[in-house]
View 1 (spheres, rainbow, N blue to C red):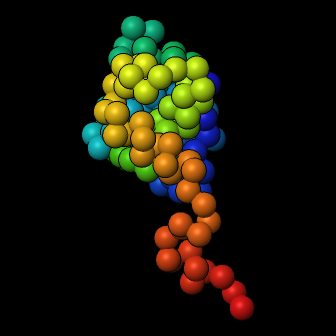
View 2: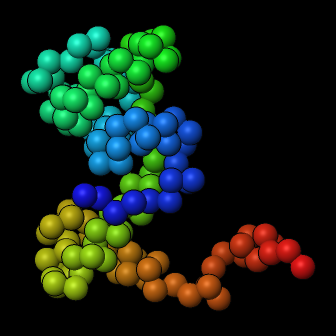
Length: 139
């Protein structure tokens, strides 16, 4: 199971998909087809790429939802770069306790710098928060 990103940072369509399909299936869909227009058949076969990526039940649910709620057969899949990075960083941090940096690089297919940045972002203190957060405080 994937670590959950802050759902409020996701695009509204992706928030809807998380409620419909669950976080794991939605993130698999986003990872595989991000920024693409995806044709979803009315009845995806078990060996259809969508069924293989998110599971046959989720694929059927997605097809029904698109046709019944949205009256279409295509889905424009958002990129969700921030959410995917947050999920990846959380997985890296979870695995960091049992592996070396080189192990993490090999496992996640990222650079050493990416592993270090993930650790730095996790260790950031509120004093290092961006300035725009300071202006959201009410006096």
